[in-house]
Structure formats: C-alpha cells, structure tokens
Amino acid sequence: MESPNPHYKEAVERGFGDAAFVADLGIVLADYGPGWCTATLVLAPRHMQQTGIVHAGVQTTLADHTAGCAAMSMTPAHELILTVEFKVNLLRPGTGESLWCRAQVLKPGRKFHVVESEVYAIAGDKKTLISKLTGTMAVLPRK
Image (tube, rainbow, N blue to C red):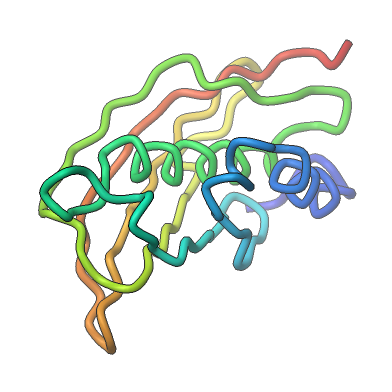
C-alpha cells in the first residue's frame, strides 16, 4: 500500500503520543508502515480481570487504537480517523507477560477504512492469538 500522506509517520506517532488513555494503560507503538501498525503492552495486575486473565477492555483498547493508527497511515494529512464500529472476538483467555497487536487496513476508502487487528499474548517464547477486531474507521476533516 502507498500512503496518500507523505508525513504519515508523524501522524501515526502523534496518534500514540497524544492518546492519554492509551499511555495510561502502557500501550506502546512498536512499528508501522503504510496500511499497518504494531503495538505492545507489558502486562501488570491492573490489566487483569478478577479471574487473572487480561481484561476484554484492555484487549479491545489495544486492538482499536492500533487499528486507528494503521488507518491514519492511509489517510490524507488534512483528515483524521474516528472509529465508528467494531466487532471483537475474544478467542482465548489472555495470559502471559505481554500483549502484541498487529493491525492492517483491509480496504482504504475516501470516507471509511475497513481494518483488522489481531492481539497475541506472549508467554516466554510462545505467542498465542487471543482476540481479533474487525472495524470501520470514518475519515473526517480536521478542524
């Protein structure tokens, strides 16, 4: 894919740098390119639900934000991205030391991008797919 924004790198980095809630959770930008983005999260007790597995809200935030930044990489500089809908499948209980997420733009468009994220739990050298998000991102003018 080729980005319509020659400065998409700054837009993706700003998407992580300016997101206070994402920073509070500890989600960190790992890598990115036109149409894709990866992020990580070192797990702590605050990320777990009462049964000791990663909270669905943590997984969803990681998947949604990473997808949004992948979408930003395919968006003109004068526009921004806003999630309008998503579906999350929680496939397995999340346990381990960290989470790794990869998001990919499936279909960029002028008004909407369709995106997909996969969230993996990392335990030692084992990587397990624990959830998958499919979403739609609206392309809106910056004000």
